[in-house]
Length: 453
Ligand SMILES: *Cc1c(COP(=O)(O)O)cnc(C)c1O
Image (cartoon, rainbow, N blue to C red; front, side, top):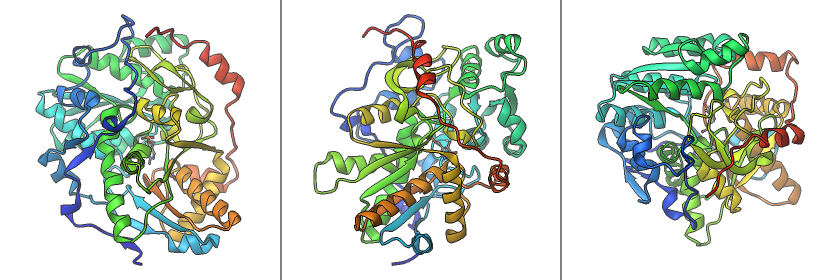
């Protein structure tokens, strides 16, 4: 087989795959934080344009991709699928390892797949401005780039620790015209309240979300945008898995295991949901779908499946999801994009029904695997993507130990060129493993909202 499979522009999917259409049970209702009642489309209009609200609740299996979006996708899609021959040799496995590479675009990660349609639907709906948050800076970069494509002003609330640690991400966003402030900021009531209590607050994704939601809710020309978790975000990311299926079939192979790292669930959903479609069809194709998360933010492996807020300030709707509690503040590990307290309701439901699996890994092993991958394949994974790299290597080693041969596919969600300080710390022996304790989980869960449905 070839080292890589590159598809022509005509293979860019013409529709997104909506897994909600194939769920056996309807999704749990989304609850309004003020009234305690299920939210309707009207409640969401101050935050999102109608096109995205319709997608959020759609039960249509196949959602057409607008031409304007496909044209933008064509700037870097279809993305390549690689066979990791050199990695297989380096670890001496009998299994076949494939990876799809989503880092080959201006944002450096899969997130541009959704920021482009989000900007497009906002522009079409007449919104002029987007307020959003970013943790490590990948989502903010993707939104800044998409905003510049469609003529929208973008304001990014960037978690303060990352703002300080990752100046190049801020510069990238500013280069594409976005305004960036460290969060908590003095620009919102919620940011000012947190600063009054703790002027040195390092910030968190939950706090930054509160600020962006407050900003968007307070201005008619402004929408809020989220880079993961929501149904419409996972929907947009299904271009990854659809292309991968075509590429695997050209390779004459089919995965036994599909792996994606998991922060809020859009990257994992993007690669895994089109394979879930095969699984739900009940034929002989029944791949295992594995979400890989950090041991320090073990939402899927140690969290509970319960109703919780999406943010620390309790401004967002309450959704049923795996959660570590909305006031969870993670350790400062380097996989910033995987440090969210919650998970996508869709992925959470699939996990609760046993249709997908989750595994948690500590960061030292993850970095070792990432460096082994980089030296073999000549590509430097983002610290987030490195969790999938590690999970794939672990699958191959387990298969060897069992004396079986497996086909393993994972998504390399982004490159690590803006994360060199993380690799530097690892190589200098400055990184440590953190495990999130069961006790901290129990404490946080006492503060979950009470919801009656
Ligand atoms: C944001 C990010 C992730 C996590 O994505 P989710 O969709 O929230 O799970 C993974 N990898 C990279 C490179 C990212 O930027």
